[in-house]
Each structure stands twice: as structure tokens, then as C-alpha cells.
Amino acid sequence: MTAATPAPPMIRMAGVDKFFGPLHVLKDVTLEVPKGQVVVVLGPSGSGKSTLCRTINRLEPINSGVIEVDGQPLPAEGKELARLRADVGMVFQSFNLFAHKSIVDNVVLAPVKVRKVPAAQARKDAMELLERVGIANQAEKYPAQLSGGQQQRAAIARALAMRPKVMLFDEPTSALDPEMVQEVLDVMTTLAREGMTMLVVTHEMGFARKAADRVIFMADGEVVEDSTPEDFFSAPKSNRAKDFLGKIL
Ligand code: ADP
Ligand code: MG
Image 1 (tube, rainbow, N blue to C red):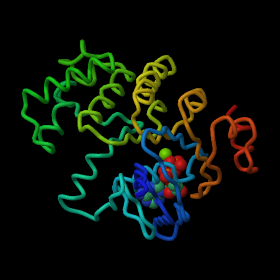
Image 2 (spheres, rainbow, N blue to C red):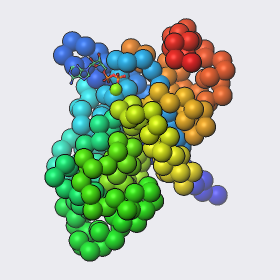
Image 3 (cartoon, helix red, strand yellow):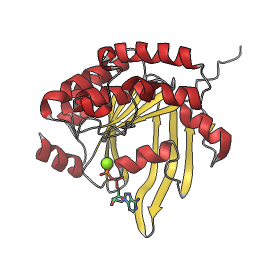
Image 4 (spheres, rainbow, N blue to C red):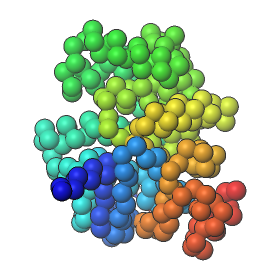
């Protein structure tokens, strides 16, 4: 009898170290995100959460260790890197939309340029994605004409347009007015329910409790805890996590 080869995790980091000059910002980070899981990353400011996200699609090089996406090591550069990077969608705190392009053109751009999708098809796909995030009626407007929540939903649609295998979110609601946070979290929750693999840096504890399969707590560049939301919020093991939760809850 031949045993089935287990599917590789969508993201695998093993023994990853990252320095900025003398500053050791990721310390022997090892973690896996299996396909279909939603992992929320928590931790104080400066603990390395954004750097972690940026190393996963090589916006930042690492000093040692391995990072694989869907079983493939990340190449350092070139066409292969561009292809693997397209598998990893990223949404930032600042929406980073192109100001001089309409919302739909923002979504169309990368599929046409990078994936060589025919323009008409890319536009049709883009309208479907804008429908999914609830802003199809804003398609012809420019980013500045939209609310922050709508802009962030457009940024999510733009990332999804590349048909990524995994989505990284780095504090996607931190720059939003409070009344717009929920509409963005709702889009993310729907994505999670549809089975998207997601790594989400957020301070939204409600989202972490409801949508996360796992919570990773980082402090000082280290993964300090890796547990279920239930365990993390009810019984954090480390003093650093207890201290963190004491400050934010
Ligand atoms: P977090 O997202 O958890 O707030 P970051 O990953 O942004 O943390 O930062 C981790 C540490 O690395 C911080 O000490 C920060 O000042 C430092 N850092 C981040 N980016 C750079 C950079 N480009 N150059 C030098 N230091 C950086
Ligand atoms: Mg950050």
C-alpha cells in the first residue's frame, strides 16, 4: 500500500532569521500555514509582524532559514520570483491604490500586465470581484472619491484579481475610521469561509476570535505562542502574551 504524500503547507517558514543591520528582527521563526487555514498574527508594535509578511513574498530578503509557498522555495529574483509572488496576495494598512486610475482599472492592471489576461476578460473578472467586495457601483470612480473602507475593499479585490493561493493582510483596518472597520472585516470573513488561506496581522480581537483557526503571538522577533484562539485568549501561556492582552482587552 502506498501512503498518499501529504499536501505541503501553503506557507512554511523554518529557522528564518532577518536582520536590519545590527537589529535582529526575526529570530529563528518557524511556522506553517496549512491550506485553507486562517492564521492571525498578534504582537506589540515593533515585534516583527510586518517584516514577517514582507519576507513571505520576498519584499524583504532573509539572512537564514527557508520559506516555501505551496512547497516551492522562493527564488531570489527573476521570472520565477514574479510567478511565485503572484501566488501571494498582499493587502497593506495604506491601500496603495493608483490614484490616477479608476477603481476597475486598478483591479485590471496586474492581471493584464503580469498574467497576460486579455483586457476584456480581465475587466469582466474585475467587475465580478468588485461585486464580491460590494463596490461594483464605484467601479468608474477614482480612489480619492471613495471612503477608506471602500478603498480597502478595492485593494482586496485588486489582490484577488491575481488569483493568489494565499492572502497576507498587514493591519488592513488600522488606518480606517472606526465605522468602516467592520465592512472590511466582513469581506475578509467571507473570504475565510470560502476557504482562502490567510495570514492576517491585526489588532481586531473580534476577528481573531471568530475567524482564526490559529493565533500566533510574536514578541521581539520571536514566535512566542502558536495556539487556537480559544486557548490563546482564555489561557495565554507566556507572560509577554498576558501582558499584551492585559493592555488591549
Ligand atoms: P511590527 O509590524 O510588528 O510593528 P516591524 O516588522 O515593522 O514590526 O518592525 C520590526 C523591527 O524592525 C522594528 O524594530 C523596526 O523598527 C525594524 N524595521 C522595520 N523595517 C525596517 C527597515 N526597513 N530598516 C530598519 N529597521 C526596520
Ligand atoms: Mg507592522
